Length: 282
Image (tube, rainbow, N blue to C red):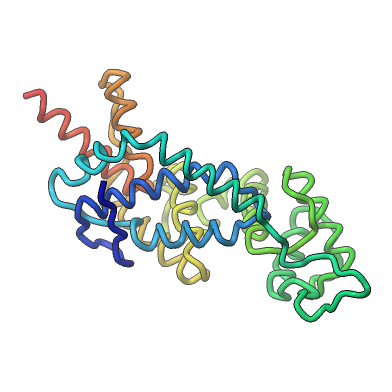
């Protein structure tokens, strides 16, 4: 079966082979996500996700193309998942830390002495906000910072290595957001989301937008993505009512659309599938 990788961009009109690629890649990413842990090859995994989002995060298609591509790919789902699982395990098993322990006789020229000062400073602030003691918030990675990171990693069930990475920062940010929501519900609608008023968005939609945009790189790109997804969601409206469908039809529509990314894309897909189902009955 023919797969074609789409060009980078949003709102491109994709052909059936290009949509197949997006569907297959979405299945692969979900399969790999549960195997690649937070400190092993996560950088490579993030690049895979970022590449997928840049090509398949928001696209258009001609009538019937999406459903045809889904029907084409679905028989191969188990094969795609199995291959993705093997690839993920190979990534994890071949993982070599970028901060290896160095013996006294080994040259240290290729081993980074400390993580990024920018990452370290943000991690120190987040750890302090979460109740840990990383020492002064100065961007200097020392014993107290490493000990605080290890304590946080242990509490979260992560690999305990004490290293400050981009993925660790993502986990720290999420933990800080959850703590803020728990202790100050009035800030829920304002954390890490653009726009003046998002009080009409459900918690699940808000988190869905955050999740859809978290791999976009810089804060400016993330917020731009969030703003775009927020506007799309307001145009499309709320989740369609599938309660009147049979269990098999409802599950079929949900499964057909679950890899579309952001809440707006998922709801748009569900509404289209619901309309097609209703039209087929008349």
